[in-house]
Length: 484
Image (spheres, rainbow, N blue to C red):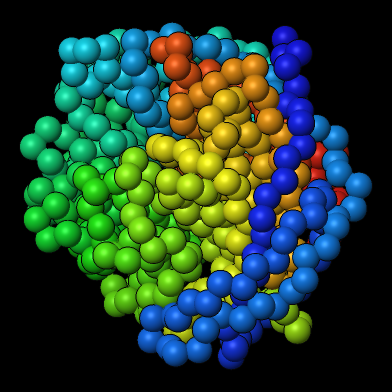
């Protein structure tokens, strides 16, 4: 049933933009219109890039955007009551040529220690197209019944599972930290017995994790080694073992600064964001050689937070750059005690640090991990309102980086959440990695009332390379166009 509490109340923020001279270019055109409008102040904040002495420079003057899109509506798919849910890993599984299952691995603590169990919404309608690349258009229902499985005993006491997983041949894969501070891959039976097995990462003294699945079906994961104070990056081929790739010095999660990880889905580059005894920095690692290409400062918050914070990044793909040309971009989520900075930085993927940066700032503070994603410069964010009451949903358009960021933000003060996440945009389809294109974004929330709520969010979307025939629908931002 459609929820009557549509997200309302537009709010503002501060936007700032900087440019570092000497841009590299990566070809491929990009064009789409603005999502939404808001007027904000442009602020110049000097910063010095690692390995370079030139400061970021102002590049744009912020102006108003066009008429805002309609307010998004959240349709509740269901509530999953559990005693003390603290995290969820989300993954899709192909159940037939016309349907998919949505799997949630939920961590909970009812006072007797951490436990994990699967909850599944079965047989969600989908259109599967294997004619070129594997594509799955998911037709998200307004409601759904979630089958909650028993506790997975082998995972008792574990923590800090990755936010996204995947299902292959009936096995749900994710990574998490098991008792004894060792990170492992969990392989969970998603069909019948709900049993699981564990695959060790090399090493020990590890805590927490992130997981990415690349288009060639290789896996990239990172964990934190408390003995060496470094983020450890690992890779695994579909039939191989986890192999150490590189270490990146970062502040410990126990100092309230949890690093973030993302990857170029083609598998060329891996990105890590976080603090290293100073302001927030972004590091690019070559997935083939394991070498660090560069490290650069991307945010200007000098002091670490006092409450637990997740830094997050997401691969955004091709965006327009100032002065012409295009480049690949990374979007990031950088929280502190006083504000939340949402940024887009480009071009990435090359041998030199990125030259262009846009940041949108929301005053206030949030903790834990949030629903955060980016597609060609459009950033989606769904998180506890930093003013301390309600839920905030923002769609941010940084116009590639060739123009100023605009955003449309909606607030719902009728309910509160503790953390949130989006369903992933990839899944395994007949042994290949498919692109998931939902007609509504699936949002998972942890609530203060000991429940996991699942919503179908009517958020604007960008769809690239999939604009023909039945794969086109009305909530695409600014329409769509063919790409070479």
